[in-house]
Amino acid sequence: MSKIDHLSVMSISVDQRTNSAPKVQEILTKNGELILGRFGIHDPREENTGLITVNLRGERSRINNMMDQLNGLEGVKVNHMEA
Image 1 (cartoon, rainbow, N blue to C red):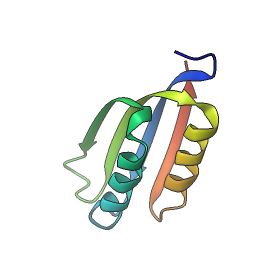
Image 2: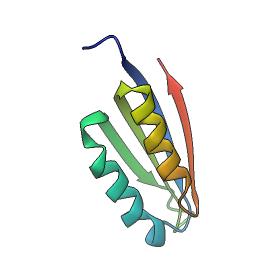
Image 3: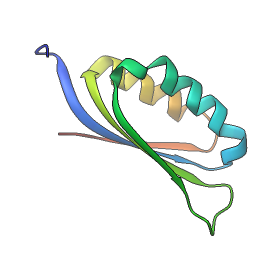
């Protein structure tokens, strides 16, 4: 682990799941080397809404870049917390 690596957790709320999910998946795949673990669920009462939690390790600038890409998608909201 380098000194610039940071452990963190990101939550990704996806509205309009059927439209946004492929784009979210593409961004997560492109940044796969940052992802330690991932868990995704959807609320059975909210058919088109999902929540993804991601455990990350990496440079803060790369994590911020991924957050910016995700936040740029319609219907996607990102929260991030460093450990």
